[in-house]
Length: 460
Ligand SMILES: [Zn+2]
Image (cartoon, rainbow, N blue to C red; front, top):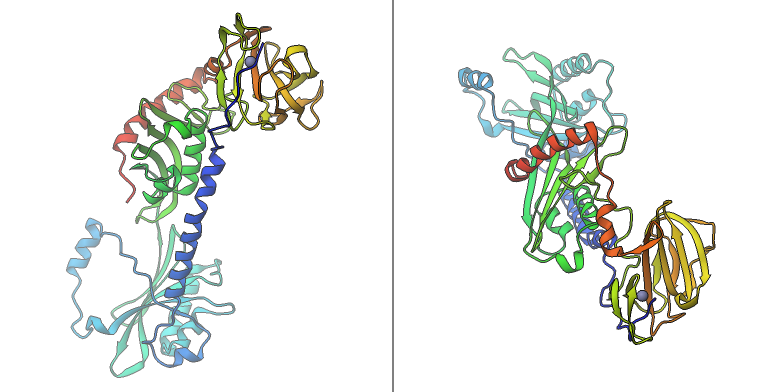
């Protein structure tokens, strides 16, 4: 059956998606730190408005600069025809963003910054009418456009008041030329927009993607979808190009509500390009497929260990102990003594104990047709005995050198129809594949995505 010469220590440290994600933590921490720094900056009190501000509970916030959407043709006409007010020099105008405190009303808020009573009553009344039953929440930002008048420098005139409680809805009150105020509700249509991030790997895949504008969640999904096929340790190199195709949700004035759900991704490796496509088959959860409709998730693990090196392949070889050529019915993975051995797939334990030259041995039945077997263990995994069910990836034992073996390694067999076959080539037959209507819909989507992976507008 089994056994190799002296097994060198593993040269292959564990490298799973989890490990990649954990590398991303420093970036997250930095982002949060930067976020806090920015918040700290914006909430500094604006020193310019009048002293009354200091006595109130209102927090004055410098308005974030938010460029207005480009005017539509109609709006442009309107702007062109508008007469410019000669008595309103622009330097008397300023913007203020106030945050609604607990118990605040619009009227109180305006009173706190010295807006004349007649104006603030009118504004508050119009605003109530506009808002109807909707309530503003504490912390809501009210953006004011104000004008200082020379005859009453402590009582600013409100030119407009804007609140946008949801990205798709904006309430505004505007001062008309006759000094009265009118209200308006603007609704912004939210629609999906397909964009892509194409960049080159520098550092981890996750960090490279985020740096180029891809959301962390989408990168995480992309890496997980790749991990079934790509050997990150050996195949991933700096400078390799990758693209993620994202679906953002954007308001008609260009506000991104959702930074992007992963639709598809493509990674250029030295010798091949790996493409993953997200798809939701009818009656099933959204998942990732190869462009020919095979699930990226394999029914069986590629190697039943995290850290290992193939030390002897399947097939006829010269037997290291018996000395003559014989069939090697499995694959040997050299790994340090005590390395956990994982169930290659979900199944049932049919054998767990000493078994001749195999030493301490576990056999799993996955389907009526397919089984896997593991030899030379030093000990069994917790609770492993005939009849129990195991999950994929569950520890079923630990690497040892029991039975006919020259050093610690795992002898791993894959059985189909009761006969041992080469485990390393089985994975190709193990993907679930789309069929029927699902396949037709999927292939149409693939055609679209493959073009968009190259031509969709880039993020930023
Ligand atoms: Zn072997």
